[in-house]
Image 1 (cartoon, helix red, strand yellow):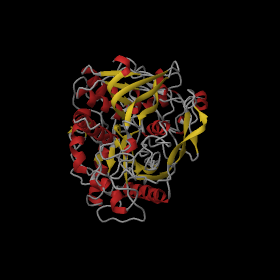
Image 2: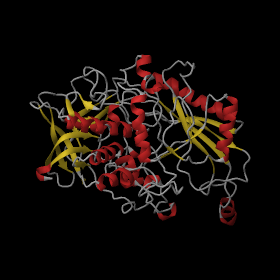
Image 3: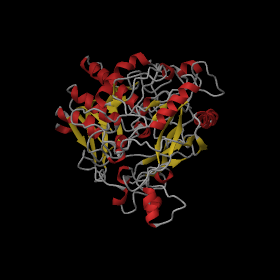
Image 4: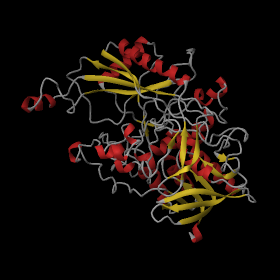
Length: 559
């Protein structure tokens, strides 16, 4: 476009940014999608997608040099040599931890849509009404019935496999046929139904892995290599799904290595006019202009952009008039659950490497249950047999070891909790003006932690897991509670919450910044509470809804 002028600018190319680009382009808007990192092309750039452990120099594990180079990423599973290039450099992009926060980022086209866990659940009114009922934070400005059609829209396009379970706490959706439970999972589900009289249902996970072909995408091949990029397009990502759809329209321009440093605000027009961009390779500065802007840089980076967009009108950043910008940061707390050995079924196995598991929806503080904490948790897990990676202690080397490993090991089942974190105002990010990143930009400071409510919940998350596996009659039941540091759930939410009143929120019910109505924020920033289920499907639904509203308002010349 001439002079870098477009109808719409999308900042970020992850799950929500890809959706914004697709919806805008399909509605006829000339759109540029700005991504701060490198380009990754579908299939061609999935360089490790067909490798096995033995194809890597260090068998897919981490090295001492990697541990040295990635002081944050080393804190959990993301640090390994199979997809190291998908995670951003801790050295190039540091952040300040006033309190420990594990921030795992993907700076490239597609963002974390290439590495996400793909579990996809609708929120229910139990989630959307929670703040209003217990008086925490502010009320959501929407309810489930308003978002339900957009969940339909997102599910149909993305492709979500799952079972229609008829659960009030976990609404059914537009599902492809579900993946199958293993025999021990079916056994566990049946025993839980009998023991808890249907109050703790065990269902197959609802996942963005397709079980039926979609245009340009093949069904899941049961390889469980989803974190490497899928050559078959079997799981939803920007590359496999929204980007091809947007490109097909002829309306999309993708600009990698474009670090958006600020949104340009015109106080006379009372709206944004465009963005300022720092080229990540050349350090040159450019400006792009548009009628509307969709900010989808991920929760914390979106907060950074808004705070860095300070003007004499908004000295604390664009969208800061309520005093809520950068506050109310949430994540799911996890790392607690239980596992057990399951006897029997030695004559049974399962097909392939299923990229999914079982799910146990929330059952605490709901349907008459009352605990000494607010909200609740669910469990993700699965039952399978040990494979070749086990090391039988009684067999050290040689033929005996090889023969032993050629047979599958014992069955086991594990469930891990995902708990809701309340939206505390004091959980916040700010600009650290004393430290800079590789590009000379001020970095974020994290002041975020889980509190007593979550600590009380974690006890139940462990005890209830032990109770269920014990009730199932399994052996060697072992509860565990690891590090619940926020951030490692990789479900950052909050920082620019939506609401009914510009005095208490950053966005209105359509994801528009109150202070700049032609700027829409539809990544995790807008979340008012965190539920206990994975949030990405909600980002998709709200993004599509926001685009529909934006284009309608644009046609009416209201923005």
